Each structure stands twice: as C-alpha cells, then as structure tokens.
Length: 226
Ligand SMILES: NC(=O)c1ccc[n+]([C@@H]2O[C@H](COP(=O)([O-])OP(=O)(O)OC[C@H]3O[C@@H](n4cnc5c(N)ncnc54)[C@H](OP(=O)(O)O)[C@@H]3O)[C@@H](O)[C@H]2O)c1
Image 1 (cartoon, rainbow, N blue to C red):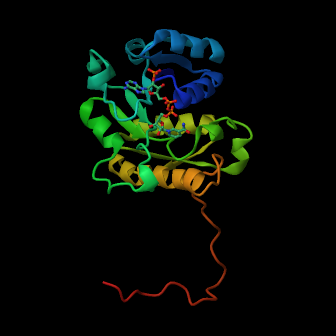
Image 2: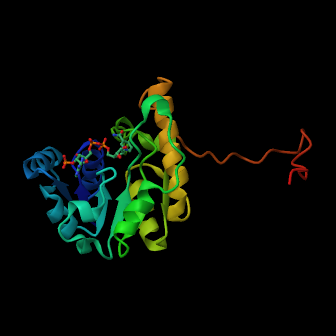
C-alpha cells in the first residue's frame, strides 16, 4: 500500500516506520519538509519525506496525526483526499485534572465532515507511543486491541489489516459515530497512564473469555429495570 503520514511526530514516525518494515511504501509529510526528510532517513526502507501536500497526493491510505486540524485548514487542495482512507489516531488535549467535557462529536467525525469524499477510520488512539516500540514483536504475545471504527466497511478492513500486520488485534468497533466512545477510551487510558501513574505500557484490550461451565451463581436472569 502507499501510506502517507500527515505530521511526522511520535505517532506518525512510529507507525510509518512499522508499516515500512512490512513492505508498504511510506511518505512522511510535515509542515517542515526538512523534519520529515530526517524522519525518512531514520526510517530507511525506501521511505520518503516532504510536505504534507506531497504525502497526501502520494498515498492511498493517510495517517492523520495533526490533532484538531482538518484538511481544509492544512492542505491547499483537500480534494486530493477524495476516495482515500484516512486513519484518525487523535485524542483530545488532556484538560486540567482530566475534567473532560461531554463529547458531542468525536475528532474523527469532525475530520470526516471536512472531507466527505474520503473514508475516515478511527484507530490506534488507545495505546501510547511506547507500546508501538514493542511492535510487531513481542507485542503479539500480549493480544493488544486496536479499536477500529468507520462507515466504509472496505476502508475499515484495510485499517484492520494494517493493525494486524504490525502485531495488534484489530477489533471491529462499528460505525464512525462509535469514535466518540473510542476517544473516551483514549482519554481513560491516559488517565490511568498519567493520572494514576501506571506508565505508558498500560493499554486497554478486549478479552473474550471462555463460557462459564454451569451457572453456579444462578445465571443471567430477566432484569426488572425498565
Ligand atoms: N504519542 C502517543 O503516545 C499517542 C498515542 C495515541 C494517540 N495519540 C494522539 O495522536 C496525535 C498525535 O500525537 P503525537 O504524539 O504524534 O504528537 P506529536 O509528536 O506532537 O506530533 C503531532 C504532529 O502534528 C503536527 N501538527 C501539530 N500542530 C499542527 C498544526 N497546527 N498544523 C499542522 N500540523 C500540526 C506536527 O507535524 P509537523 O511538525 O511534522 O508538521 C506534529 O508532528 C494526538 O492527537 C495524540 O493525542 C498519541
């Protein structure tokens, strides 16, 4: 696949390197082409660096790491993203005391509104950069979930494949509106990492447990709640 990275910071650099190691063609973009070229040099594997415009034009799949900045604010011709898949890994800025306002619209939905002809997929926001440093080995042993939500089934499948290739367990999380919940998970894990001082290797995964044998506790009974 041709993958373009918008913003060559921690997430862009880490995921770009991992995907280039899997044989994908990766173009690192930045507001400062010298910065993304330095990242490409570090990455090797035939990666390139340049402007965000070049990265967007080059790729079929784009990783969007510029939090809260939508394509019409960053690209002179955002139509270059039409028909492409955009992976949104963003989380809100952490407010004082982790006192988040109620989420009415996710960052991913805001991004999707700005580029209605692209397929935005939410993913990779519930683990810290340090976790990516463990990928693709030994992360596989830990069965770490990547929650993937989007309205375009094919785009979602592509992003699930990209997650699996680098050692994660993709979890189909339904439509893009569910990004509100996934972003909430991102906020929560950062509370645990930073606020509760568990450190950056803490992450959130879904475990599907084996069924209980018998119903020692009486089993699930009809609820009287309305
Ligand atoms: N780091 C983590 O552990 C982690 C984990 C999960 C999710 N996330 C989320 O992923 C997103 C990126 O995080 P990060 O750690 O990669 O941050 P970062 O290292 O600060 O990189 C963010 C990138 O966004 C670009 N950017 C910043 N302000 C911009 C602006 N005004 N206009 C255009 N581009 C701008 C910058 O690109 P250039 O300077 O190259 O132009 C920068 O490299 C955030 O939303 C974060 O919450 C981070």
